[in-house]
Image 1 (spheres, helix red, strand yellow):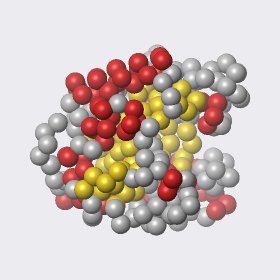
Image 2 (image 1 turned 180 degrees about the horizontal axis):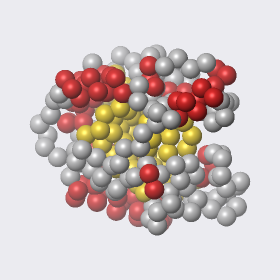
Image 3 (image 1 turned 45 degrees about the horizontal axis):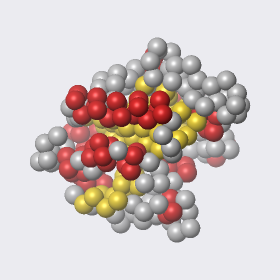
Length: 258
């Protein structure tokens, strides 16, 4: 990728502020995506640790244990930044970092404690993810982080693509609308009205989504024939430090500058 940073337009900045997410089409070249996907597939086949299995997530419909059918279906290849140079290269790409600096308004750090993974969605045992905000389990001085999702292949409603509720990062949600894991309760009438506003952007290989840590998002099951792969990293402004004594603070952030 060209090392010369490309600025975001005022329209793109306003769209991110208004909707809570922004899609940059064809940001990553096809060859680079194919290489990362090939590494991910090889690591899935070899079960290269660290990993997260579907049975460990505990979402509705997930296998009950590692020994149950599908229990060892890999949901995430963790520690992507350290896993292979191709992922670290993308996560610290100068153009990516420059865009993040514009949106965050300061120098950029990559958190190694959250996301930092290759997210997979398998056809048979890849469970759906309910409506949630990432900041629910992240511990920073301010709830202002940005996740960056790179589609390593085609993502659509049929294979479990991301869904967003535009503008939901600006909403105040009453506690009774959330379950014990801070997911929006499916049966709550106010939540159902909110779900109706959800959109499922179709992504092509190389498309990148920037989304605020406070925007509600979800993903369905994969009804296609092949496993879906996405590289996901999360970033914060360097002045937005992890809260001491938390899991967030247990992993050192990577200072990337502008």
